[in-house]
Length: 327
Image (tube, rainbow, N blue to C red):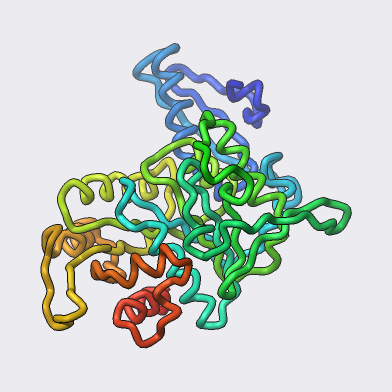
């Protein structure tokens, strides 16, 4: 719908010579698309009326009790902080970071929820060793809600719990986005300190859906040191920080920073390059939260469903715990 059909024109359009003014009303002042809507409205006047028109647009917001949009009205999520874990490309260890970070926060006594939003490549169930789990429904205040699976102190939901693990999920963007909204809105998450979202790589409908559905506290971008990954990581940072989205990037995590053989624990081999994450973080003015080494035990822990942070004395576990402590 256009702005008038959507009921967003709050008053009449006032025209005085080459000056035009009007007011647009939004549901809430935290709407991430306010700036882009205002720019589009101004561009429409310049395009269809007169390029030299001075456009003055005032913004107003509905009362708090009516500010919740239809897609947010039934949200049962109660989380102090909602953090997206993102990577510009696949295969950089985003899910590994999300899983270990969730468990590390739980070990610190935090109430943690983890949503596996990677519809086409869900890996959280395997990394928690709960591939065979099937969530049940419970009636809460007259609503049937999905009860998340809990493991290692973390509540989690994934599309992997509801589809055949051997079959590909071939869904269009709208269908995938609706599934994600259902896993958020129709689940009994309870009260959480942290709600982590393991996003799919790249940028897609799912990312926009989550940005519109939830008030994100911030995002963490995961990359590896080589230039190919850093190019995509830069795009991921831009997606969150541009004026259409405006979500703070809490920091960058560099995974597979260096290889350390078990028999030579003091040696570091920079297989994918050295210092790429640090340079990008400095260039973009965001913190580098940590550099995670490429070690066999991290991979083995993910495959077995026992995240490395469950081994508190392991050097890699200490790095993940340090990242969690910074958050």
